[in-house]
View 1 (cartoon, rainbow, N blue to C red):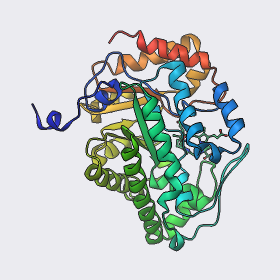
View 2: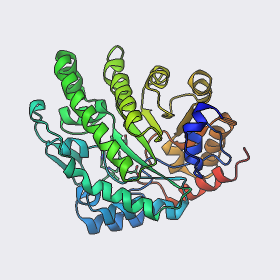
View 3: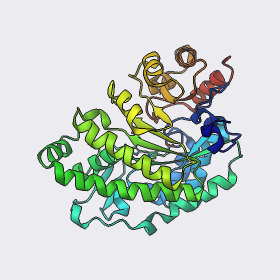
Length: 347
Ligand code: 1CP
């Protein structure tokens, strides 16, 4: 038995086996934002919980919301219901989710940020509850935002998409920005290791805004922090596979895949699958990358899109996903059609 196989756990989960580099038929699937506003049962629970943060920090509600899509569509993995912005909250930055507008963060003073692990203990309780309820062949994914993406919200104070304030701050004060990234790296390692201790089977690092940085900054603030998080977690939880999702990175995906050492690489809709398989997908699990608007569209367009992806990755270790999150207007029946199309596709 090879060294790699000898150190890997035997698992009944197709999702985890794909991350070990073994092609699966049918291809395992889950969807970013699979729990959320497109599901009526989510909207009902969200209304009972009141605020979004209250939903994230009530283990009973958060566990239920995590499991809702699995009950309906039988995905191969559940993703913890939480948000990437709980890290700034645990570091002491004020955080609110304003109804209909999105996140709003308070003033940032990097020198005053101190990670308070106790603030995130409800998240670990959610993980324990979900893991108890999930079947053994279903994986539970823990997650965090990557430091660059989290820092974008911390500096800009809200979402939006361009994060020009953050970029100007970082370009003018690279050492001060390094200090912020370092604090987020430390908190993220502690947070993800605790998620694994509570029962997460795999981890995903979301770098939703990595596509905003050109080189050499991409290496400095996307690749290097991801490498550090990966290598520190490899020491603390060597059995737990990790997926990195450098959204918008284009050709830089290849450097990211080669240099971070992640077991899986999430691809957005713009990354050609044949290019990714050829250049960094041999033996490494890729994940993605259906256009969420095809899922919103449904019908033949959806079925053709799904089959096109599955044909392109035939024989490769692969996890089917979207290139970004489920759009909230998506009819749940379209997700059922997607699940059926994947399951019935001949490998
Ligand atoms: O009103 C509501 O119900 C809140 C909407 C919502 C939801 C359902 C937010 C606010 N966060 C979430 C859950 C969430 N967020 C999950 C849970 C599980 C799942 O995927 O099913 C995850 C993994 C995230 C991750 C997240 N939050 C990312 C990375 C992925 C991505 O979408 O790019 C980002 C960038 C956020 C920030 C965030 N949280 C919420 C909103 C509306 C935003 C985006 C703000 C913006 O930039 O406009």
